[in-house]
Length: 479
Image (cartoon, rainbow, N blue to C red; front, side, top):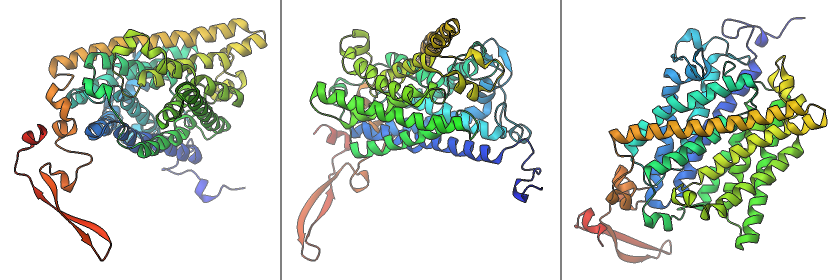
């Protein structure tokens, strides 16, 4: 019996490559990229007040481009290449044909697919950090921060947890698709950087209303649906585990949304779109380290907890703890990513199913991956306690490492350019930062004004013309 011609190996489709896995991985990478571009670009640009819409969206847009270029230049091999020191890979380019067409370190697809897949993960991590810095960071400082943080923070965490030679990977930490590497890291780094950059203007901290909540839902929807690739691509194979991971992801997010909305309703008297979006994010983040290694009922339980514990830390505890209240985090990245990511890591250590871990890791020593609940049930209490200790230890490592490296990077960048824009620019926002306005009438001419309102009998509408005001833009700002 012969294979169909489209399945026969050739120079472009070597014997080791699985076309189905390669297609799924490329699709997963693409939808993760869509979470950032346009997902978070839309979300950030719509959640902030209109004077900061361009700057907020542009921070995300720039970060995605900046990360991908650094990623193929040196970042990928620092994260997944040969070990240079205890917790860091050796830098190297990922642009030559020989390397990119070779087999990836995991999975039945080429390195080019793996580089892109991991690259969009790195890109979204920096964009999440940006959420804590909106409305006041100097864009030039952000341009420097992005490559520095990718190089000296992200690559270390990724190598330690995801690379087969990483020290936490060898210990047996379970991070299915980035609860530690992406979300906990971004939450801690964003909160730390927010401290060094300083808060928004007092006026913006008091009133920072969204410019378009309907568009916020569009951005949130792209983020939610894109998580199919985020967690579904984690196994590096189009398998049953990938299917389970996708279903668990959406079930957990749905449960988290419902719990968050109910808490808002009972505690504050009314449900809000903003609360629903935050509940969606915490659910997606919480399930990420466990997506393919827990049962469906566990995913629902994790959703209930991710919709309630981060809700409490954000809505109640935040105002009671001075250090949380003092640091300005516009998108609540600390609560939605650091708190939810750590919660997911702990619950993974409790609820990870041994059989699912075996199907996911496919390694001879898979027995070391076992949730504490199953360890107690199966008489492997020591193994379950060990797994929980590893999960908690990894959380401590990610928190401390990111706090230190992010602080050092902010101090370095701050010695070159100001981290924060000046007071006058804070009042003007996009116009001062980029010379552009997101919602400008008549081509953004600040001197235009309406005149000569007339009734159009043909279309039954009001027509108007406008004239220019000869005063300068600075004079107009004083009106």
